[in-house]
Image 1: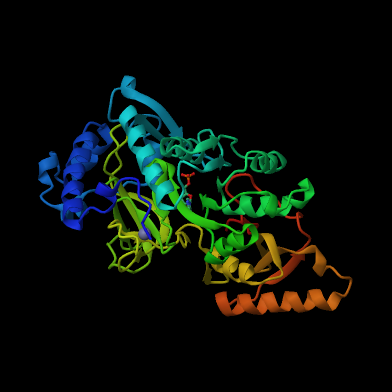
Image 2: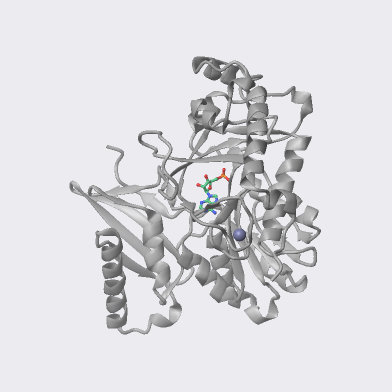
Length: 436
Ligand code: AMP
Ligand code: ZN
């Protein structure tokens, strides 16, 4: 089988050459960073005043970390490394929890980003013959414009519908015989549930692939999406601080997400000690931009948790692979002292055949104890009127959760369509416990 590839020279580059390229670009990035007051100060603190002070890639460890709080403190342009007239676009993060963070781009920055997204699309087996419906928001959120320009560069026919209006999405898919979509996994599950209401069946669509990302999801959720639509779904990872989509993507083999190492230096660290972890251990993803002039970021702490997949991918790409994102170091729940990741709960739910396409995790306080409530939609046909069917199912899900997370939560079963849905990132956890 021939491997679909966009830029073979870079994607199959020998590691040694790739690392030489990284060092050149890292020095260039430090030179750009030194143009900002923020990094001039930070780098001076560690005795670094010149890019040539970096003797090898190991010296990356001498560089200071950058956090989301640093980005917020630098609002709006404390991290801008070029004159404003050379910038052509900015994106901000959603900023629901305080000051937004801003990333500026020059024209070459946008060009590089587009190139990375084109590589991802082709690695996942899509081509210029595909009709691409982009169901993510076209605004400050980077998923819309990011995938849009990448898909155009590949030569796909792009339907720039943006997010929301599920009925319209379904009719566009049918009328234009869409073959590839980009959406959050939770939205695709919601869309599937809405097909019948629009009088459309999966057979009337020509869908063959989906790019899913922007939110944590389990392998079981991916398999469910694949089975419901009869397609292949590929995991797409990115964050606005690193441009957006195009950071790491699955190739057709679906064995982890290739991270484009000519554009990003990758480290996995222990979020407690801040020390780099040996390959294969799970920790926080830290990235350094290697190609972005307007807003270079050194050792940015993403808070996302993952590990490196060992060995080589059958596709032959030399860029290493990240495992599916396990969650964020700040989304771990502590329930009566036990650590629980929402992804562990999702795993169990999506493995249960009766479970539908939506769920919600709620935390409450009962006296001095935490109470974990897992609300999940189940298929309508299960509401037969016989309460034993539902009692049995509740008990089965409760026990399966107990063996996965060591806590037996209260399980609530809901009818399809009754739990809240989001057009963008799903909000899976509602924590009603008082702050202290
Ligand atoms: P934003 O900067 O608003 O695009 O959000 C980026 C964040 O979304 C990342 O830091 C991750 O926490 C999450 N995210 C993006 N893509 C994925 C993915 N494929 N799997 C899990 N989480 C993701
Ligand atoms: Zn591969």
